[in-house]
Length: 468
Ligand SMILES: Cc1ncc(COP(=O)(O)O)c(C=O)c1O
Image (cartoon, rainbow, N blue to C red; front, top):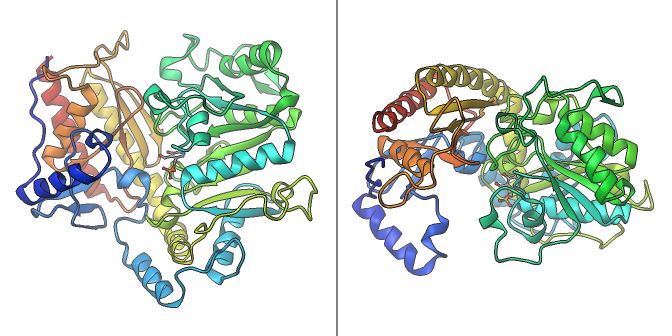
């Protein structure tokens, strides 16, 4: 057992947490081991009401890409909020929304006509994309992935396959969603190794991965006719499921399969999009042009906004009569003018250097994490792209044996111990997947803050390891 003491909130923070417990939903829905009350935040730093500052390597779940309260984003919000707070983007017109849609049409992969639908969150974007693909194809079935996380609504939950607690108790979920293995190559579902897992078979000239072959040869032969599938929903890089980067062939294969059978390829770029991986959209690393992209989180630097960018024929019935008709979908708040103004400014900042910074500082951080892994036996894998990085904690590097669910005498898991220990040192981190720690700092992070975080991570690894 590891000896470990949970972090304690300061006196003012503790009072606020006490009040929160009486009125907010269960305390155990909060991130375990981080009793953080935030009074203010700026750039990479957040401050609690007791005056303690924390280095933020979570960015509010990969949301504040431009850093906390970026002055230009705040200015854009202030200016817009003096002009128009709300009118209803489903029915009326305002420039910030049009400008943002134009930007997203330009930035998302694919040089073809597109249309944009604005929602308020990631799950709402998925909800819209799900309705869109069923409506357009009139096909009932959907392919999704084990390890996926797509949000908390019934569509999000039904598509997700990350942790059973997110689904348990909510059945029946939306039917006809078939989950298949995602290429989590460190723990391959087929106990194979990439790239030697590739056989001689190809699909449209692309070497078939066994996990994709499972779709073409097993699911499409034994379970369902691909002609009955409306969409493949896939995170370009799995987020909550463990920051898992699929190999080079994966997305091109999904593109080729979906094209062959008239299936809509929907990419969830909610966590990995908007510059986080060192490209504006993560799928640019694979050179694939999807039919639909779902965006949210970092889009408006912290204001609620989601977007679905789709090929024009899917969303515009003047282009294709199968597309959504007037009234088929909409939202009261979606595309709020203030959120759109924040998003327009966010994109300027991303384009103006932050995406490049994500690639550069992300590369530096990853190299250093690999070095740390070389010196420690409890880090089994380092993975990710740009500033979407994770390392996986293992009890045994050779066998990849996981830590037991409880590593302290009071029942805490290894991720809780890691995240809590980092928090005590002043670093905010989140877990992901099974026993992995994710690094998703704001994209304004510099090498100085990267070194600070790496120092604290190294100390925590050493402390935990010394007790094993
Ligand atoms: C990949 C992915 N999709 C969808 C969602 C759901 O987004 P939201 O919480 O804004 O509904 C999340 C949230 O973490 C996510 O990471």
